[in-house]
Image 1 (cartoon, helix red, strand yellow):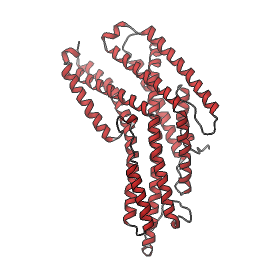
Image 2 (cartoon, rainbow, N blue to C red):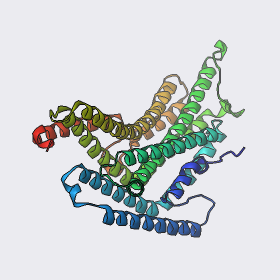
Image 3 (cartoon, one colour):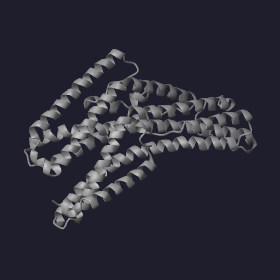
Image 4 (cartoon, rainbow, N blue to C red):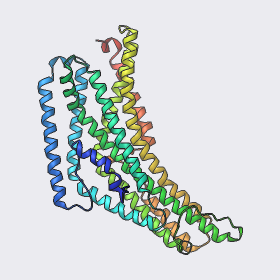
Length: 399
């Protein structure tokens, strides 16, 4: 059975989807720059074809009557999503070398962790990527089917499928980009966990050195035979890896900054409008009970999908930050139990390093992804819905 050797190989299912759906550049440490250039040419051609198809559908199927109903909102939203996709693709062309360097640096960090006795389980990471790829395929099929089923304007089935596939392509690609970001950050979290395991082993060994007569030491991690004698040197290596992983997290965020900003803007508008739509449908006395229930269910489906996408991105970042902070708790405990001055000095350097380089996921510096951002986001959406309700009462919304 084939086993992945590095991060790129564990993400192979996701990268294959990027190629199939005409986004991104083929990147691998072993390939030459000329092959990357050919990959960019392929991406440009496929993107141009996608753009031409989008313009063709808009030109032939857009109707003036859409301006006066909900179809215009959907059409405007679709154009924004398509614009976001093309911006993300262009950003991918410019950031391909940076992404390649991130992968190479992470491979070196994995080698160091493996030498310290805490190797990253590449097979498990590949399984996670396969699950994510299968989920995305099922999700895309479900979304496309729903939009074909509930297309707002009566038209023949073939034309409806063509329109939905063309308009839905941008949305699917953007979700794939967000999913790739979440997988990369989750990979960082896994490596922080490995660093913390090595630190805990270090802590147990030091406790064993102080209390060897009590026989309390029990190791759960496979280590080199000289681990106990070199724990200060190992702590120094872990400090360097921890710093490197934090820097890689920031580099990954920079690569996906524009995509994340566009996604958050899209989700803010989507969740706000859908929440307002639910209120207007339920509060409108002119709408029948059955129509209220069916419309509310449909809106709730889209609202749930958008909310889960938003929560997934922020939850992944928050969990990674939590694992990063856990390192500080471990080294503080190690310092309190240590009587070795050299070890204390190394721990102080580790603590100072974490204070000077806090881990944050700040796309373009506009906001910090995480649970606090979820709280602020919900508050902002609620405020906007209240403003919409006050500005556009039911009698106007029903017209």
